[in-house]
Image 1 (cartoon, helix red, strand yellow):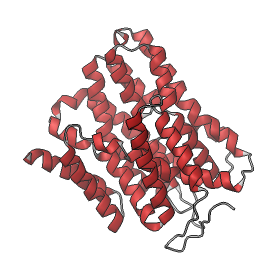
Image 2: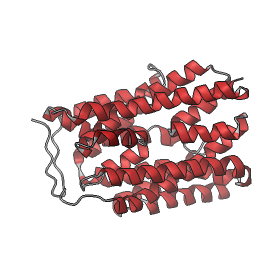
Image 3: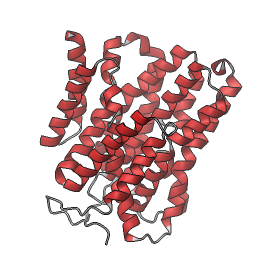
Image 4: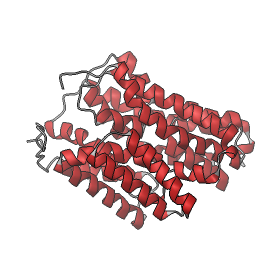
Length: 106
Length: 237
């Protein structure tokens, strides 16, 4: 097994570092001096919102394994609060508290 | 966009990332230990790789006895989304000294990217750096704590912390969705499309997310944006 070989584990981590860092690094050098077409610029501006949508769904559905009710109530609270009042701390802390309470009761 | 975000603004903006990261990093430390990964290697994962989802994936594959090459390849596929995020962030930051780029690139995580890019003000590299540093320190502190103290946390507390990052994403996204019907439409489309692709199970791990981001963002450039609150953005001509 991999975890029992310190050298192979280090190689694995090194490989994963490269596989993570290189995709993060290359665009910085590519985009810097480039004059972008308006549509491509708009494309890049929209990425945060589509990425967030796709990061939330469907991952959130399995975020609290085996506890769909707790997860649903927690995320509904976060969504409701963020929509109506904004802010980040209350939705995050509140969602954790709600999930914990539902698990405690259930 | 006249106000420029400073390092000081970064501290305030980084607190929710810290809150979201610490519990998840604790879970990572607990998981790594349970699979028999040494303390040193567990910490090296967080120090050198600094990519939450990939680190969890790696531990799970190690437990299954999957080989090194396949784990590294899966990491590359999973992190290709950061290629898109770096491109987007780099465009928004504008020209920076070339010597500063390697450090800016290291900390482009989903959370840092999301928090930075949804700000209306102009970004500075110092603002982004502070976000990244806070994320990095909390990710590593959480990993350390999880490895040593994970057993002390009741399983119920650990389970409830699983919601933290998703609550963070929701808290970042929903005000934007309320502000712009275009964002509402695109984010929902992206989430539903991603769910659908995962059900179909056609592409290798990580590529569903990349495909969704590219396709839906590109479609979005054809959707006119009518911002409710004094926005000025329009679809590209």
